[in-house]
Image (cartoon, rainbow, N blue to C red):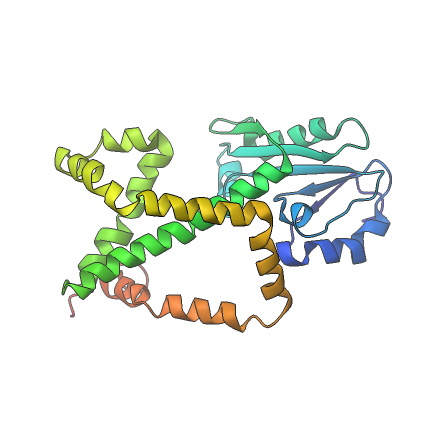
Length: 265
């Protein structure tokens, strides 16, 4: 650790600040750079850097496995960069260089300069409202609606969960407008007239509320309390989500290894 020019702290949000202070901070030399992939520990978690080091945010907008896959295939990924402590006067340039090494300069990549608070707040919001929380609750609610109405759970799973991947791929490659251009007119009309019934003013108000909880620090305080204490409430939430029937339906529709649909009912 001692003598390192760059130290990347790729640790869980809830433990990063403590580990850094206990095991890393004293070994840093003036001019070194501490690199974060997400700003939670700095914005909300009490992470404080020594005065003589740079603080860099280099945050790929992709899961780690995709970052690695893109690197192996000589593709790029979008990368957020920021300098949240500039002791050397070169912090942002160092962050940009690391981002380019990760893939920001390759085909399909992008380098987006921001600040660490914006990255942190937008990332948390995206997780909660859409890419993890929102989408899983949406598909679960749709699945339960069909099953409760008497439809075969295999059909329900394939329609509202399994097909999602293929349509999201189109959105990823061509955007929402590109998806609308590539579906049937029936699907297009239904989407444009019925979609707003599902995601409506009530939904947007809920999104605004959770964004305010993120920006105020209320969510971070809640998570710090949970992560520092008994995690039984989190385990209970996980268990409840697993009991909703999607896993069983997936197994029945696709088999354990994702093979052809089962013929048993």
